[in-house]
Amino acid sequence: MEKVKNPIGRALIFLALVLLVVYSIMPFAWSLITSLKYPVEANNPTPKLWGFKANLDNYADLWLYMKGSEFVPYAIGILVIMVAIVAFAILSTKFEWMSKPKTNMIAVAGLLLVFLLLPKFASMSKFYGYFINSVIVTVGTLVISISIGCVGGYALARYNKIWGVIILIAALGFRALPRMAFVLPYYYIGQFTHLYDTRILLIITMVAINQPFTIWMLRSFFMDIPKEIEEAAMIDGAGRLESFFKVIIPIAWPGIITTSLFTLLLAYNEFLMPKILTQTNWTLPVAIASYTSGEDAAYRAIAAAASVSITIPIIIVIIFFQKYLVKGLAFGAVKG
Image (tube, rainbow, N blue to C red; front, side):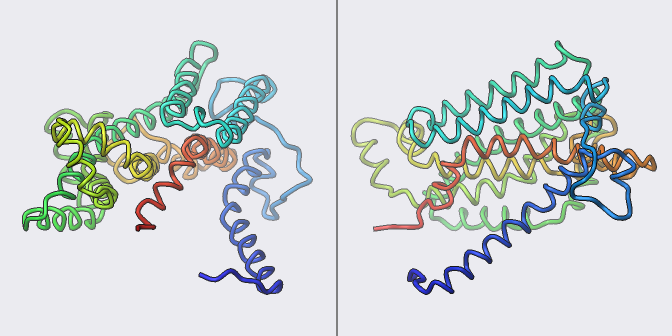
């Protein structure tokens, strides 16, 4: 693609990109503004983007059993953590050790540990329990899906017989099925095994739904890695499994992280399956839907606060792994 040299053309492209960015972030910005309003202003027929009295009552009601004024110290602490995360993301572009996957995983695990220890310092509301459910279901789905997807994707990338094609087509057909096709079977499985309304059933269901996606995506990354690399490792004495873990996995790491992020988003934002397969152990999307369907006028502002809260963890994860996300999306794009 040739570079646009015409100043007018460059200005139009820049303007189009700015409008696209504004259009993309508008829902989040709108939710953020609504979450800072009192119920009367949030339900005003003429919405205000500015000129209203901001408060943290909605976040206090959502997360903690306390008033908005008492929530201020916690809000300051969260703001400090967010500033530290942004600073980490900026510094990681200058220091190589800060951008390594292990460092990023340790940092994310540390933040998760902080959230898990919150009940020891404050009285958390039900929404915190829904957050923990989402974290457990998402992490469980991610670990199992990626573990199976790496082995299955690598095997199908190196196996060129007809059975490999049949497995891939069957997986694609399984992934193309609508969500409603999974509801009744897993509902009856949950009732029969007494796993209904448990995180285990949700994890099993989410793995089954997302597994074809992970296998297809990881297979495409493994296909771009030349066979000669692992063959050279096996000539030096490494076995098939050893060459896979010590040679192939490090090369395909950006692709694995990219697939992990997409799998995380699919599991974290899933609504239908947790809604039907749980009665009390809801995840965050189902909890937010319960606020939006309430008759109380205050629920609209609380639902906006919940929408902002559910987005922040994803933003944090993307900030930590943005480098590998870009590498993974461009993996195999240039050859030769």
